Image (cartoon, rainbow, N blue to C red; front, side, top):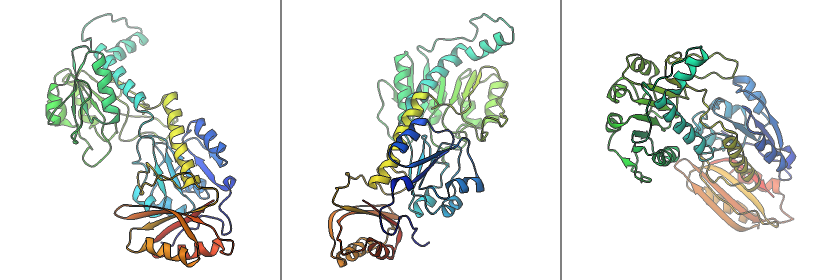
Length: 419
């Protein structure tokens, strides 16, 4: 694929010419931040797809999405002006990360900003399931008064099993212990426990000992239907299952059978294998209508506080990429953190395939123009490299000529200037 044209041939691109498209009702704070940086911001509700999505993003330099918009290889090939994707959420599985990297598009997310909101929701559900609050509330709404302690328990002294002890799982652990729960956790990585939480050696061991199991794992080949017929049968009679992770992790039909048979006492599910694209699309699930089963529409991180934090976190990363070339915390390209550009320097940012000799060729082109390199930064991974060169411009050198030669360097994916 030839290198992409990203900049005016004479000057660094004016800020107002940088178009940012935000989809899926991203928090207004992101609009304010990006607009305040001088960019042109366009916001849309919903999660467009196909030609509609390409049409919206065709002339955008950056696009912001949440969890429903799918960015495929075809999308990136159809949007050559795009520099960056901001995922205003935790996950990035809705983006073809390899395709983005191969076209020099950096992808950012917000891995920290909504962890507290999800953790609090889990704790809320642990209590609600043990007290059968949803079932009691539904009965009252239907006009039935069912005052009874049957099946209702305190959480103090009971065992919570956490599958996946990352940012969210570990926060759940701390909150659960504060309420007097015993905490077990299982993770494929050897993870340091917080407080008195105990790491068990296997998922089977955790399932057999826990009164309530909460899942906090990514969507991956190894986690799809991680909890199926066999795993549910291993859980303690009357135990509860909570899934605020990914919809592919639990076999919902098997979960329905486990609840209908009375083996499990209830469940709380926030994510589903197939989810409506908008609020006007009907929702169906094998779990609908079951007692003591809390169903929520993928709102684990949907609090005002979390959405504002996410807007600031991802929006700031997009601004830094645009204004400084920084790719720190990008999930798909080499990470380069950069200082602010010196006022007397120009900055050249160069995405390339990780091939021998690229950096030397860049230096040769620049030196051949009699240009001094004031600072040089380089990071690479197995497939791609990202070089950032701060140079002292010369009045007798046309920047367009320099960039044309840099674009011609073997392995170049894209190059642009910042000044």
